[in-house]
Image 1 (cartoon, helix red, strand yellow):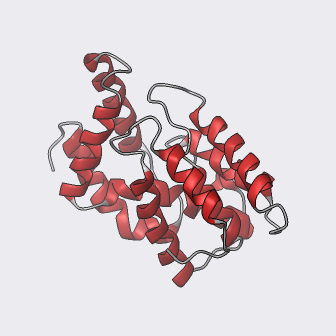
Image 2: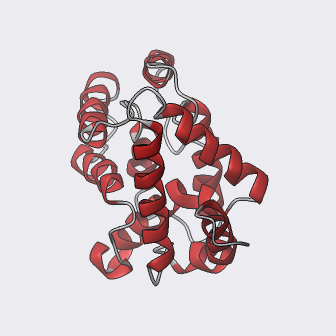
Image 3: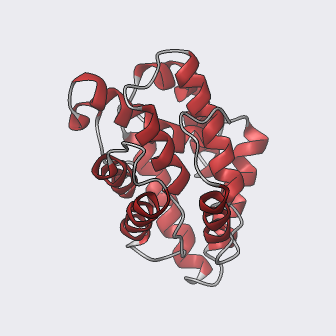
Length: 206
């Protein structure tokens, strides 16, 4: 990954340890590495207004993750703020912006492009959230592997029947939305594939 700032080895080691606890089928550090490829694509294309803040938010957005809990995003944001202050206090990072971006991930599937405001910060927020949702528009095999991994993470958290009801409700909600992706570039590239994947996942055919 093409990091927009250098961070200490100890900071990355602690982060990798966080992503390994508890053991995860999808929300592990491999998920972060996949998102970093999208970060690099945006950096090489339209660009990021505040690349350091977005990069750090992507690094930490799922650092705390326990299936079924409603405070994962808030706890991840708190961890990010503490770790940035601990390891890179003089890097000039806007910690409040990192926290704000991470906390936005709790609202996946509820936001419209206009909800994130105008200007460069709004563009960053839209693309940041789209990076995290890009898996929906992956090829069918990768999407299906992701869908199975999410189910595996919830296996011990909620009854299987309840998980499937809630999961289908979430996916159908995405299908009903005018925009799955909040930025034009992600929308143009991934919307058609994402809708095909979602329809298949909820049993509505290809």
